[in-house]
Image: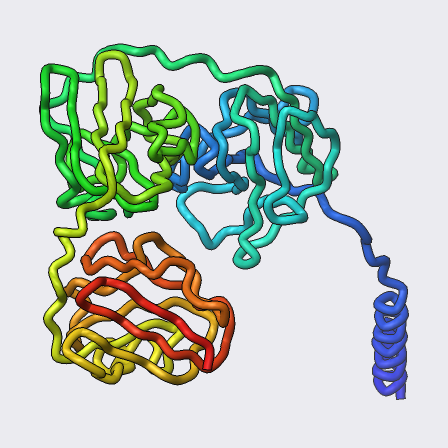
Length: 392
């Protein structure tokens, strides 16, 4: 009987403990709010930062003496984007981001603005609207950030650039974005290099070697610097890896570009329209359309075939949806010239086509942009290199 009593007492004790545990679970205190982000390291990555998008070597911030969870950085930021990470070497890790994508960092200082942290999408980033010297402070205890604008950028130290060759790369140039075979300039003297030829609307920058995107490039002093019939918006250029600024060619034509590697300047001269003599009639038995705006999409093995009306006239009648398109004369290969607009994203809408002229080339990879779904008649004139778009 005594042994049975002992088991009874033990069972009662265990049951009481279990009930007590259940009561304890019911009374758990949920901690609300954001817990401090505990880390001993913090980095910035992005084309606005000194080290660019190099996740293996991002720009480090420094923990402050007053609080190890408040990190600060002082230095030069370029126009571009940035986000922050706790470790190097991985794009899959959580990143510190703005609460709204594209939140601008400008000359106007901000204090204690909330930020977010998560991995994956949405890939929100801050955007530096004004290049300059800044002090950035990130409080990982309260999930806030502050910015202080410290002043304008220092001017570059201009020393003559020694080079045997200079190349242009970009969708505005004859060879497009082919870094293995970019458009080579002609050497006029020790520091003067010149290009004379056709440019199309698009972007461009220059380099001294082929085959490597990681080298320093000759770039405009600010992103989107315009080249057009009036010349170049600013003659000054820089020689740097970041930010990834490029010239913007606004108007197609024959140009003479002169790069002065001694004084870091570029001169742009518009020589005239691209000669029509360059446009020999395109001989083709068939014409096809490819693109997500077309019925067969990007299927180069079975693109949408047009109807041959005469030797040089080909038409399509049917539905188009919002998206891109270009045309070709062969199937089953992307390695061929394509019929393209004279500038990228030339719009096709129910009102017609933005520009009737087209080109027949491998680069740049320009495409028409269909902006409105509907029934269309497209007419390609391979003799005069024009396209018409009509609403059916």
